[in-house]
Amino acid sequence: MDTHVDFTQPAPGRRRPRRAVKALTAVAVVAALAVGGAYAAGIGPFADDGPDPEATAEARAFLADWSAGRLPAAAARTTSPDRARQVLSSFTTGLDITRPKLTAKAPKETGDGTVTVPFTARMPITGLGTWTYTSALPLRQQKDGAWKVDWRLSLVHPRLSDTEKFRLEREEDKPVEATDRDGETLSGATHPSLAPVLAQLAARSGGGPRGAVLLVDRASGEVERTEAAFGRKPATKSDGPVRTTLDATWQSAAERALAEADGKNAALVALRIDDGEILAVANSPASGFNRAVSGTYAPGSTWKIVTSSALLLKGAVAPDDVVDCPKYLTVGKKWQNVETSEHPGATFREDFTESCNTAFISLRGKLADGELGDVAKKYFGVGQTWHVGVPSYDGSVPVPRDATEKAASMIGQGRVQANPLIMASVTATAVSGTFHQPSLVPGTEDTTTTTPLPREVVSQLRALMRATVTEGTADVLADLPGEIGAKTGTAEVSDDQDNNGWMVAHRGNVAVACVVEEGVTGGGSAGPVLHSLLSAVPED
Image 1: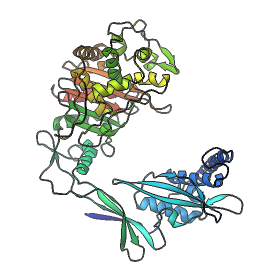
Image 2 (image 1 turned 135 degrees about the horizontal axis):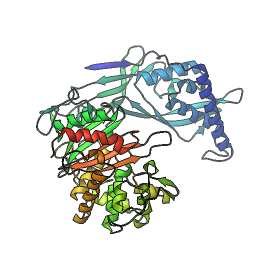
Image 3 (image 1 turned 90 degrees about the horizontal axis):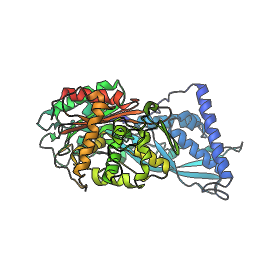
Image 4 (image 1 turned 45 degrees about the vertical axis):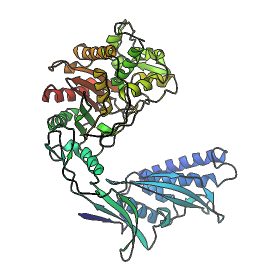
């Protein structure tokens, strides 16, 4: 069925309180003056004999306001504020554009007193994709000496005019049909948390949302050209539902388990250790972003599995070696443990089970700067290109730029990035010794190349993770049947946000990983989620 969203009349913008508008404008003016002052001082690419730096600053401020949705403030920077506000609001609302990204390029003088600032527009259209084009802002100096954007429709888009406008058309296919590994039907109705995954499977098979931005004649409505097209029709009709590696029992249990996250954003992945086949992918909220597979998070102390592997591989430490765990350690900044705990005279085994940050950071000199990333890639496949069956983020472990970053990387912070898919795979590799590329659809291409972990290292990692359940920070799982091993993690986000909580675990032939955004601690937030999951499924 086709549905139309017609960009005809300017949609009324929601007015901000007058005081808020004045405050936003004042802040923007100060920023513009600061930028202009920097350029006037000869700093930047347009110093000295280039276009007036105040004009450039005003153009950048206009684009910043438009990008951030501050449309009244953006309009106030033009020569026709009322008309500008109406058109900007109608353009973004009528075309379902959210959070445009507008990037200024080098300005130029046109010779008639006007400064032109070209820019690239990346317009995300809800549910379809990003419409990218280029346009330019003309700026003219006013009688009071101030620069303003010389308003005209064509600055929004070069083809927008008094005679032509844009229209968004959407076309929806029948939702993709999918089955689990045993042929049981999977749908968004029975498994709501699969909604983003099913949408990605639909796109993979050529179905799912499609649409286009059309240029039409204002008077007749006749289509003159297609400006952007999204999605594609399948080349051939599918012979049947998409078969996945998912297990309906595990998927249902995973979705119920996420209720333990108390409404926080959370994600969970469960996969088979012996072949990497994914049994469950759950996201909360249930619609929108597939954070379980495509999210980018600091993995926190769950990353100590990889750090421990790197240390054990080269014999830099043994489980019974004493590695003191002080309350604080300064390396570029002051590091501490969760709840500022300390364990004087602790062994490395205790450092792992109690997740001691300061002890792990104190061992940073045992590894070369790029060694942690090399181990992650060589043995765990992290940072290589994975072909899961849907778009995925496959991890990043950059070489530290300084001592502070190296300290952070030892405990899964800084620029180390992962998600539940990656950490479930890391867990599976650690306890089996062999990396298997995760897959959601059978028969996906595998271009990864890895080396098995030595059996001694695998045995040591399994013992460390088991002890974390029986006597460490993952004791929330201790009452469950089976030889469960686990690792908790707490990852800092920012000064004004609570930490993310992590937990990974394995039992039988299944590895699982969960992150709860702003969960504070791993044991307290992700722990109950995994307890609920493993309580509801049989030992595999």
